[in-house]
Length: 461
Image 1: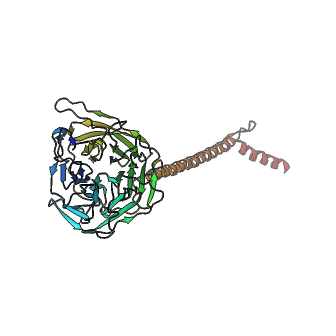
Image 2: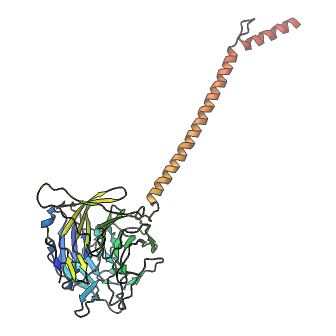
Image 3: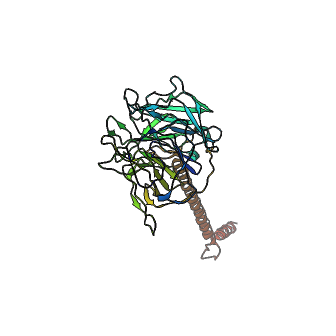
């Protein structure tokens, strides 16, 4: 059996949930807990309302057609009126304790009607592996960040099969109306090593982020990668996370940073948050503090050992951590669920992020539940680690052209001024010569020459 934390934000212990930002609401779909295995629950949190963190509770919605942990989410082609969930793991075998892979296909949730349907059944080899375990842990799926023409794709990376062999391949499924086509493998080289329980985060329509995971008994990894979906190329990050992590979570901040949370077992060193700068490749441990409170319920610092939890970014600067475990030791059977909500106020610096844990959540403006506009294939909002972003290259080129033009103009102007000066000096010299007078005649020099010539002509006559 598992233990619980005191404050109850979730009516049910939830880990490994599918996390979706839909308009101004946060959804936790399915998931699992240590008591019963996969869950069929759906929870919702309205982010437009301000509330005390300690007293907040998520609203319980319709049940799924079948329990599902670690499902992958997308949105329907009708503008995203439905949340689509596929892959993941269903019932746990009572004897072996192993979870069975989802073989029922795609599940559709109608937001307007608060209802679930099983949209299609997989047959044959449409699933990657009947025993696929602990593939990529997908971070929050933000509806507004996905263009309509990219919202029907979901990705699965890694995991292990029935022979307990770690997998390193990337698979994609494309939703088509009420059905789905087969999983297709995406060939890439080089790519991250085979692993379980890494973090997969969709940054936008063109790039994925992938980090951590583990190999073998407990070999936790600290590398991170980005994948360009247009070229199918992986690029490994220059820096490394400070500690190896698996079953961790992450959010994409300010179109630049990935804020990693949790993913470490109890005991030993632990760092709750790390910030990865995708512009420079720099990785830094995030400093976090408790907010000073005037009165009422004080803010609470999250435990550093959060695992299998959910995270989301509300607005631009509020980090939410919820669900998961705060003590996960399968050997000693000491497993404690996290039922609290933690809210961190972000202070976004030029090269990192600072976090202050606050006792109150500030409601964000209501935004329509709509997908972003269609994105062209060449859309690219992520810069290669350590490289120079395209927009900065354009700025540099424009400035360089402007500088060259300014230097050329300065040279032309200087030459023109010099020519004008020389012309003025020549004119002054001529005027000076014309203004000189002969001392004997008192006539100007040129006029005196004419006078002398006439004088000589008269003498010769």
